Image 1 (cartoon, helix red, strand yellow):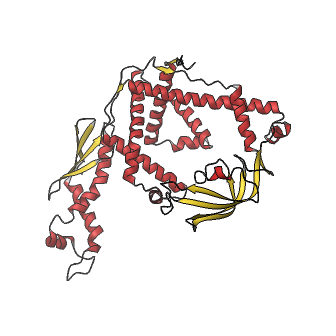
Image 2 (cartoon, rainbow, N blue to C red):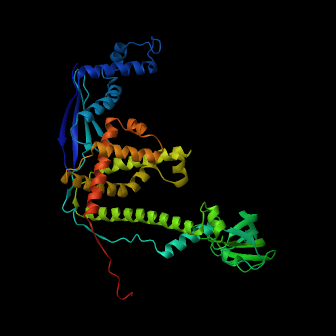
Image 3 (cartoon, helix red, strand yellow):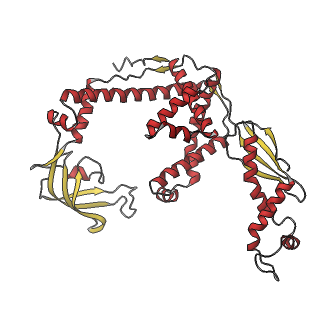
Length: 439
């Protein structure tokens, strides 16, 4: 059996054209498959539908009648084989063009693709970044404790005028020019004053009123209000408060500590500080990584093909669609809700995708320069990390990641992380100068 022939021609800006030649005998098989697939759709007078011989159809419509469908059958399989044969790293979907589709000749098509660019980093040791403070101050601790106390706060009824921060239970009915409008009426509606959840100006006018008091609130709907018939209109809401509730914070005492699972207030405070320190250290590490990557990218020269960026952007949209499906929502529903479409999403995500690609290529360049590799020990450590993350057994993760593609991806991720750690370790942290005038 003849073999597939693949020739690669490098183009400008890290693009390439693969010329793929499908042997004549393989194409003939595809033509037969096309005939078997489509014969049921073809009607010819004097023949039962689906029983017309291929030779009869080709005699009536031409020898090339099934060529188009045969090409569609050949291309996916031939492209997959060509991709596997190619020694270059292909990083985009192929743009297919048919070059030869003739009787008695091999089927030839081309695939234009992006190749993984090779970045050049001018400097990656001694990059200077701003020093990031990760110390947990007493003020940080007190703020965190306050948030915990607020989370356990109770709403208690009070007999006084409503104030900012209170929750009121009220009835209201809105009208424009004396005519009530849809959605403008509610009874026993809970509203936290100062939350900004109502039309601008509404909540401020509720402040100062007492329970069981009737009063009017005068507002103007925003010019870009979602209900067009109300946009920019002046409205009057007739209101009555039934109850005013004040937020009462929990007290930091032994009972509070016990409810939180601690033996004492001191133990609770100590645990809270430790968690803050871990959180702030992780946040500082993320910020340092972002800062050093930004500096590294400034030192990097690379040409990134648009086809590569577009392919990655499309993949990110597909991943988002999969996340939506897990939440019971289709991407089509999301498009209806947001007014977006697939092309808009791809275009919007391309700048951030390109930024991520540029950072990855820069780190790959560092890894090459430092001859970094993923060892078996690195892989085992990664398996353990993933097992903890997904709360499963290490052996299951190892089996899940045993494929050639998975191993390649995992090793690349490990090497890139090594490169990032190396650049971070060799970076210089510099305190930012304060503005003397501001002091």
